[in-house]
Image (tube, rainbow, N blue to C red; front, side):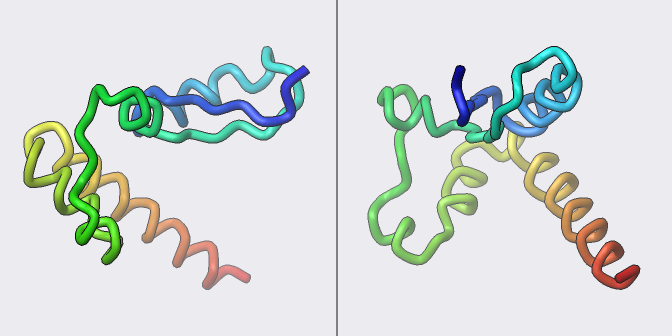
Length: 91
């Protein structure tokens, strides 16, 4: 069986799918890889090299698709930071 499984459904669909199906799936490491398949297939245009160099592809994508990505980037990422900090303070 596969030891590594890539799930490319986009956030938060892929994380929900993994969580909802974990008991039915074989033991493996599951990665939510977002748009990686679409980038490599050429379906989605990647950010210019200089943007990639500075690690701000998220800003490029947000400018290209603000309606689709605003909630994802600001709501879900803010929640992730909040829960991460909260968990750090518990320890």
